Structure formats: structure tokens, C-alpha cells
Length: 260
Length: 371
Image (tube, rainbow over all chains, first blue to last red; front, side):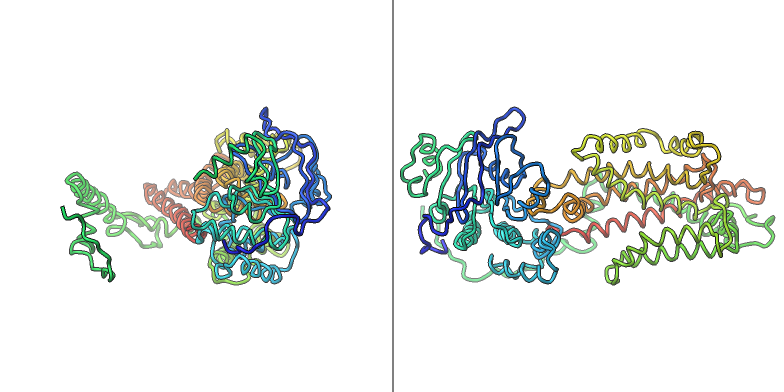
């Protein structure tokens, strides 16, 4: 990886006030109980990696945080705003929370630069020139400024995902959510995306990542969480989590994904 | 066995030209026309079919045709075996304007010239100030055209009873087309709304006009509708037909738009929402521009269908181009010119529809950004 000398996980840069508080939260899809009694506090500057088998509810959990999914019971408080049906609150939270998707979800009819400036111009009401300047800065940060005028369809998967990260950053979010950002990538492109995420973590961003990149989790996470069947089974510091898992289900899961 | 010999290529193989017979016209003919005995037979049969149809048509329509515009109409088109284009030439202005007064026809010409020039400016990529031209066409032009066509004030008034010909056809086509796109889009969005009342209203507005033939809509709007209005109120006949056709067109457009919306992946909605875009911004900036690209063939098909459906206004007594031509062939001077009249009408309709079709193909290519 690009930054082998990054300091190990710990309480570095983590403050005491909560960026996200989830209290007794439940969610159902029809009759199906996807998330069961979730309690989670994410402190500002904290980097949490969520793993678990597919269908365990980990994506649904982070999608509840910016209201792409609605929860039916309990409380979610993001940046001191509680998520309710109040559209203003939802909009305010979405301005502070960036999200990166498994399938990038770039807008194919817009150029890379237009993808980046769309939300700043239309949501934050930034002037076009200023938005473009900021967009170019972020493209530099994800190391693809030369692709600014291309359309997403002309880029490789890794490049598209880096553009997607830059697009989220253009809104100056205080929290970033990653929903399996490397799962749809060819193997040789995974590291370029992880490098960007590592440097983002170093800058002190509050991050929630659903991912199975365990090397990445060891390197940057303050906390690793294992979910199964809609419950949080175990959470711990990465060293403890990987070397000394407590629950049988965690042990089984880790043995399955680390056996190759 | 000695096994394989280790090998490492040190130079590139150069590109060689293809062998003879793989390119060029002979190759094309062999591959496309005579690739198998069955295809060879088909090719020869088709060539024969073209020969027996095109040659007589050409003789009738061009070689033996009468192109003069005679002063004495009794003598026109006496020759046998050729088309009588004199009929079209003499009556051309009537086919274009119907019974619109001669001295006011410049108004129709001006209005259409302005429309054609502005639309051309919008369609050609290099022209600047597109935003202002677009605003002019949407906001100012309808009032300008209304004023020029109907008159009033400084201009002499022309009642819609005098409207006719290609002019009326274009009015009956352009107005519903222009109205159907925004209203159809709103209906489609309404139908996908999560609010039950809006959704039900939109479903009714879409499914009722779609469930009946256009002829019924025209009868309803011109015969039945006045019965429900309070006595003394009068709606112009052309206006009533325009309202009916616009409803009909919007309902069809709504389903075309809905099809386009459904083709947009969920992830696009989610990405737009996650960035904090409001519903209307998400639709206007992200979803509809992409959906529109997918919908172009469907939209243009609706436009073409609508353009040809204007001929149905004969049932409520309006004289669009086809009906003016039919009426003219019944005149004693021009008996037996039905074929010429219909060929001319078909040609005009074809030119319009084919142009629309070509423009849509051009647009599809232009908007194609995913490689």
C-alpha cells in the first residue's frame, strides 16, 4: 500500500463528541426484520469498518444514516439533527454526509467536472468558477485532474470510483459513508481507490466503510464492526478484532474470508 | 519427444494489407447481394420488382406528366397516361393556406418563418445565445403567432373558419406536440408519485384519453363539450380541437416518458439524493436529461403519429391539407385528379415525418456519451 508508515489505529484524532448517534433503531422490509435494535455512536474523526456476510444489513445500516432507507423505530441523530420525516432535516443531513456507492453512480450524461460541480452549484449555491476551481483541487487529490473533461463512460472502474469520491468531497461533508467501494472493481484497480481512502482517513474525516478489505481495516480503522442477521455481533479495535475474535460467528466469518 | 522450443518475440509483426477480394465493391456485392443461392435469387427478384414498379411510375409522374399552369382551365391535362401536376400548381396556394384571405397570407408566412429560423438556430450547435432563443420560442412566440394568425388590433381579423390547408395541419400538429412534452412529463412524474391523490388523478388523465380513439376525443371536444358549458359561452372550434388533441397527445407522451424514467437505474436517484438535490433538481438535472435521451425514438414516433392524426379533423369539419385536396379533386375542372392529389399529400406528409425521423437519429448520436 502507498503509506506503509501510517500510524496504527487507536484514538488518534478522535474527539469526544458524537457525529452520529443511533439509539435502539429497528428497520423492516415488509415483514422482514433487517436491522434489529442497533445502538451505535460514531465519534467525530472516527473511522469504522463494518463487515459481515451479504444480507447482514450492513449496507442498509449506513443507508439509513442519510435516509436512503427509512427506519421505523428508534432514533438516528446525525450532526445534532434527528432524522424524521422533516424534509429540511433530511436535506441538512445530506449536505453534511457524503456517500460513495459500490457501482459509482456517476452521472453518465455529464463530464467528470460537471459531475463534481453539480451539487456545489445547485445545493450549496457556490458560483460556477469557484465550484470548478474546488473540483479541480479534489481531482488533483484523487490524482486524475487530466480526466476532468471526459465522460464517466470513458474512464476505468478505478478512475470512476475516485471521481465518485472526489464528487462527494466537493460538498465538504463532515462524514463520509462508503458502501462496498471496491467490490465492483477489477483486482488491479482496488489499491488506487484504497490509497485515496487512506489519505482521506489521514486527513481526519469521519468515515463509515462497509468493506471486506481487511488490510485496509487494519491500517486505518479505529473500530471494526461485525454484523450478521441485522445485529451488531461484535465490535473492537482492529488488532483485537482480527487476532482475538470473541464470538463464534465472527471467528467463522473471519476464517472464511481470510483463508485464501 | 523433444517438447517445445522456448520462444521470446523480439520484434513486432508488421500490419499487412488484407488479401484481394476482402475489400472493395466486388467484395461488398458478393457479401451483401449474392452470399448464397437463395440470396442471389432474392436479389434478382427484387431487381425485377423494382423495374416493373419504378419505370411506369417514372413515366407517369415525370415523362408524360403535364407541368404547365394553363390559363384556360378547361384545356388542362388533356393528354393521357401522365400525371396532371397542373392541378397541384394551380391550386397550390389553396393547399397551403385553405381559405385564409390572400392579402393576409404574409402573416402566416412570417409566423412560420420565425418559427423555422428559431428552431434551426436551436438545433444547430454553433449558434450562440441558445438560452434566449429558447425563451423567445417558449414565452413570446405563442402570443406572437396567435396575434399574427388571428389578427385583431392593427391587423385585420381572420376567423378560424377560414383557416385550412397545410397551415392548419401545422397548427394542429405543432401546438399539441409543444403542449404534450411538458404536460406529458408532469403526468408521468405524477403517476410515479408516492402521494395517492396526485397519482390517481394522473392515472385517470393518462388512461382515459389513451383508452379511446382520437376520433372520439375530437367528437367529444367539438360536439359534447359545448353541451356541458353554460349557454352563451362560445369556444372556437379550432381551439376545442386543439385542447382535445393536446390532452390525447399528453397522455401518450406521459407513457413514453414513464418508460424512459423506468430505464434509469436506481443508483442515479440515490446518488442525486445523497448529494442533497431536491426532488425537482434531481429530476431536472440528473434523471430527465438521461431519460430524454432514451425516449427520443419514442417521442419522435408520437410526434409523427400525431402529425398524421391531424387528418382526422375532417370528422368535425375542419379543412386541413388532406381535406382541402380531397375537396379540390371534386371540382368539375379537375375531375379524375385524385391520384395526383393524394400523391402530393403523401409526399408532403412524408417530407415532414422523414425530417423528424432523421433529426431524432442525429440527436441520438449527439447525446450518446457512454462509450
